[in-house]
Image: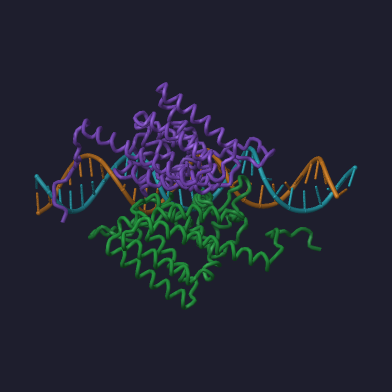
Length: 251
Length: 251
DNA sequence: ACTTGGTAGACTGTCTACCAAGTGCCGTGC
DNA sequence: GCACGGCACTTGGTAGACAGTCTACCAAGT
């Protein structure tokens, strides 16, 4: 769950209500900063995170950092080892598989509900995202492609009107985005063709078709990851262990 | 998510590894204590939770309480209002619906995977749980029934071998258990008949059937809740809303 | 009667300091 | 080479302090 909070932070506001600036709790900012640093690789996988270090780095005290780290731990971004500290999570072999399987279930259901509840406005926005995403993809802008992909999926889950699906899917998507950025270019064109078909099914209100396409879509993604993985293994070969900071006797 | 931690805490251990007593972090205990108190109604819905109060009550300092409260907030058990504090979450009208819809998706997929991976041993345990649950149900032990129901569902999700499904489903189930205990007796017998059919499908490795039964099972539960709700509303009077202090058109 | 202004109390959010216990590492001694 | 012991580091938890904010309430003004 996590961030189920109704937060008016971004997106649709009921109407004339405009809640004024509510200063975000520090722990929230720290959390955001850390996930961002993990995703963009500033904090490499397996790296040992020390509370005071991060505190100093971000200019806050230990407390907010601790709270953020615990949340990160709960959501699987870092592993907290009592008495030692936090390590940036190192994804296990089968983890991506499981993640994508979970995503398949969540988003396929979301797509079904989205098809059921879609408004004209929603469909228009979906179409727009498809167009933008395809453009990014064709121009080779990987970052933009991945981001737009995320936005599209997230919009679909939101259209489901089910806050739990939204929340879980958001978590999963974020993780997928972390593990997955390198794969994006490979999937590229096919992925956006599938998005188009999906949007079409939703606009027609065809629940079963939407659900099915979304499931296949995720499945293709999974396959692409495996192919890439196999290729990478063949090339980069033997990397059974990358001891992070071992300075054992250096002489 | 939360508690996705690879933690060997409970469940399947690789083999002879048995981590000896790892003293649970205090915040964990506090978290457990609080959820328990919320579920059993000691902390009523809407109640304002004050950190120092809880700290005193549980004999710890503010910090572990804060950390527990934040986790509870992330998981939707309480709502944290900045600068004011935590309130025990008051479930919205449609929340149970959404919860059960999410559960349907998660557990249906779990059942499918469980059917795919089931071992003889797993099936035996499932059968045992069915027997126990039915016995509880027939003897009118509601608490036992609900608990066993939870154990059965949780075992099935674990059999899926997907840690994300396990984790999400666990969260959802816990929430369902909170909202739902009063409904259990109504569903009673039918529910356990369905469980039996489900276990049969799993034991036969029939994925589609298992998934379908689980989906219908959840759907029936949802329906039962609505029926009960409607009945309760009819009896307990119409309660349109007791607007406390509205005496002016909000421009 | 309704609004405004002011006051007071209660809590949270964050910081600092401190201590105990646990963990990993390294060198010593065998 | 390997076990043992000790050291430095880090978390987990406690205590106290302080500013900012939120709620409620009362009094005076319109």
